[in-house]
Amino acid sequence: MTRYAVPDVAPQHPHCTEIVIRRSRFLAQCAQTPNPATARAFVDQIRRQHADATHNCWAYAAGAPGDTAQIGSSDDGEPHGTAGRPMLQIVLHSGIGELCVVVSRWFGGVKLGTGGLVRAYQDSVRECLASLPVRERVPECSLQLALGYAHVDALRRMLPTFEARLESEEYLADARLQLRLPQEHVAAFTVALAGISNGAARCSVLEESSD
Image (cartoon, rainbow, N blue to C red; front, side):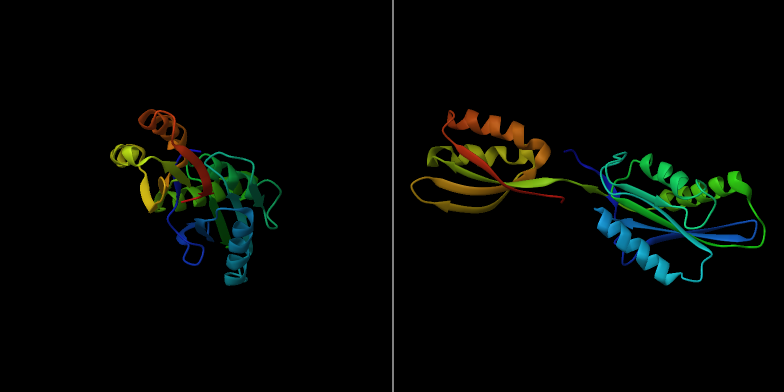
């Protein structure tokens, strides 16, 4: 799994932008939602916050950018296909993962038509994402190593190459070290470890995490 951009915004403090189209007010709010449960909770939060809105339409993609395994959307009473799905298309093509957007609309008295609604909701999402702060998500894992004392210095020298950091170390009959590094480097790291230890070092994955 490789690194990718995610919103640098928690659901408790979403990123907001607003546009007005023919007297209708469109308020877009977005945040990082790493799974569908978090996305649904964010949607419910905005619904409660803006219960007076005519519609609270939403879309989320909880995985990596463009990943359709964990997606959802809703028109929330707008004509079918004019809000949720068009919003989702912008989300999926944004290059940003783990993203949920809710657009609250207050009807201004002028009907926009189906085409106008699609454009309005998509423009609202685009406007919000244009100024959204993002950070890099780096999936990591922890490795447990056991190797001879003679190879520890060589191991330490190669850690920066793989963006690895030492979490703990214990010296018994052999050296026991725990490292943390990006998942994308694990395969190459194990090859390099075998090289410096002539295949004698032992390595096992302890856990994986999102950041």
